[in-house]
Length: 318
Image (tube, rainbow, N blue to C red):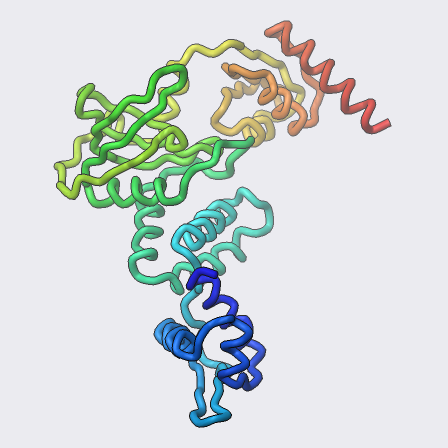
């Protein structure tokens, strides 16, 4: 059993607030009396008030009341909790925004100072347009916070990058901002070898190393990291050019598609939705969320996909 796991087991026993003879505790945890005493001291260092009695029948009892002490979490566990709460606080889980903000405040306050600085860095250098849609790849929390600290501290980075359809390359960059968009994370940085600005998907970054040096920040073209990433999307050739006439107010359709499409109002309850996508699953989901009659102008493949999905849904409902 690792030290952290043993500490959690010890804490769970003490939180019953009963009196525990030292021998009984040591037996339950399968440790020596000396190890038990060290673990008790670790709990006290973390802020838990543990009363002890000496002698043959000596033992320990956790004192009730007092302020909540620091969390017993591994660093990556604490970061994962805080990142998840930040996501919910941004409104991605309906009805949890206020509760998540309150919980996030408590979690960050209970983190050790070095870990709290990592989370503060992540918050300070991240741009996000709001609620995310769709699934996304897994991002390593340690990599994410390493990038965030380098952005905040103007510290050059090196890392390996696996671009889509290309071999892994070694990059030397001056990190600028992190962008959270479409359930993906992007690093906006100036590539020193290519002498140009780039956006890197964080899930494709590995082995990031901060150099320990400092650089003078450059001015990002346009000054907006989120707009820079979105402009990069528009430059990528897409397979489908979607155009749909929707019998719904433009604000309703904009709320469903977000920044992933253009909505042009053509009447009080009519608009045109235009999207450039590689997969037709996304416009189908947007149209289903709007829940209003529509007419597809292009592409023909979208008509077939809507018919296929409608058939599956109807069969399942029946």
